Image 1 (cartoon, rainbow, N blue to C red):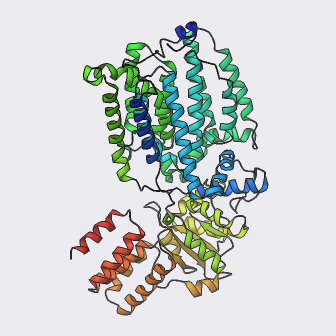
Image 2: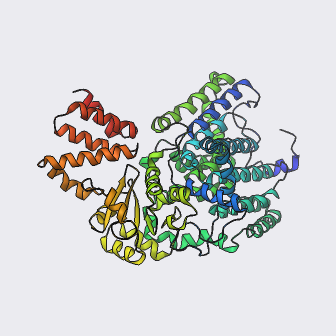
Length: 603
């Protein structure tokens, strides 16, 4: 054993055995250190991919404002339709912590945040597995597998900080349950920090409740200390800039807002899709963990805390992919313990007893499970700028586009970063879909039906509209706006399309920069494609406008592709080859473009 009190150790032998079936391998052993080094590399490498999610610009904007004013905004400052209304921002603490990383080192600061979070959270989980009695190499393998499932949630989001809080809570509770020093009063501080950093604060109480119930069942008496800590922690959670409203927010969302049409369009709120998660560890977490849990229970008895957590977090992950990352964090130490107990005897052979043999097997497994995911990742330190309306915002700044604007909500964060606090360039809707339920309803239905766009436009009388190019298939809004002669398309690239109203303050911009041939929507493009073959002058005008597009932005794979198609139709194969190369350079991850380049290179 390890110097624990005999009485407390005896109390927990049914759930946390002192050692697994494999021979113990000390942390200081070179073989153990080698596996730890490889696992660390795998975790860091798995989270080192280009930033492409839209939320982090708003996180940085709010963090910047908190540091500038030394106050937490409690009213809606981020969109113009409801400007000044009461606001709830459960993630203000995360944003205040994040912004100094950006201020100090820019993009490298954001990646430093990623790496620090990953190392801290998974180091705590390895330590938790050790507290459970795991003495082999299973924690490192479990960590690598879990990191693959967690990696997509390692984007610059408040839930990254939650990973540390969750891992720390597990370590505290397992240390206490295993007879070690009782750090449970720290849970009060964790509850307070969690409530001020992310909407998922209630899951911390769910975890505490699972361990409390486990203690009640094992000790046959209520765990009064844990109950008291949970009660005090809940009271501490009310100490936030928004009071009870911040604590009610997740329940209000689940009961009411979750069912609004707009949230059906958000991918992270959709149920887990197995086709997209076959190789990232999700099957082992959602299906494998319960199986290992049952197999271990047959040998060592039921771990009620584990059973409750597995049921809760696996269900949440199946219901919404956004919970897959939290499932990965919770599952890691239990997976390590259960795998060592259940699978250890199957592999306990003399040929595998040597430390370096076991280390070699663990290293091979760690790398092998990562390769399929690594091959599909866009590895590197940087930002996928082609996803953000960088050049569109430049155009707005250079030519004075301002007033009441409309935007795709995914573009709201970047607009805030560029223009806040300019009231006449604030987003119509931000990354949190801020606004009334009626605004969200009209916004959602206007993406597909002209009558809803007309109602929305009549209500707010927009002067400019910034649409994301990369949206879901049913989005017809570019076609709808383009069909309205009162609007002019004045800028477009692969990230965004900017329309301005032909009459009013934007009239001069519409006349000077309005596209006359190149369309924004697919419907007009389909009609135009037939006319281009018959009209030489139309083709020339079409080419000039496409060339203008490529000069205004480096993110113009679509324009280069259309120029290549035009050149190919006119028999200019060399020009078509050059345009396709430029298109692929603008969007190197487009497999269809890669195939077209390969095909034309063979000609």
